[in-house]
Image (cartoon, rainbow, N blue to C red; front, top):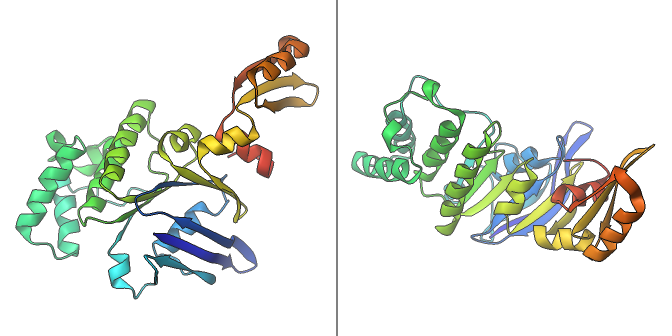
Length: 277
């Protein structure tokens, strides 16, 4: 279990994360959602101890996490937005380097490399250097590298950024398999469909503060699962309804400049925070 208690991070007079408290269950797929500058990456950075909190604390299984807590940090693996691999290394070399950093025996490194590259569908490309990999392959390799140390918690900061639709879906399937192994996954993303497809619960963050915390289904149901978009003099206005018949009645009154659709998590966030993800 991960507990964030009154977590705060300030950079001078700017507060990036403001008194954030939440609990993430063991084995849960949890999402942090919010627009640029909401505090998502800062939160992930504090959870990985790259940044230290200005106030508050993070507990893993009841134990305080800090840079000196080596046993707690060993449970964590982080995948950042940036590709953090040497361009002249091939996949085998990337994996071996990771294993050596954690003093794993050579035989274990080879066995885990074979198993993980097979698991991610990369085994046929193992001798290709990083600079010649597609963006999707690089992301998958970063996950394989993280899993080399058998982490119990995987922190993912925009793991599918820049991927095409097919590669993104392949990544989703890979992450589902990782989660099925009992790994707790914390995900930040700007892709609404990604959070809806993967996360059991999501936290909506705006300007560093927690706005909503629940499952995607419950958040959408609370707002109203049916949305009617009307285009008028003031631009696009959305109205939300709990019953389809109510939405259709509104649509029939609105004329040709209206449309009916399903409500999304972004609608929830716009309704709460007044701006888009």
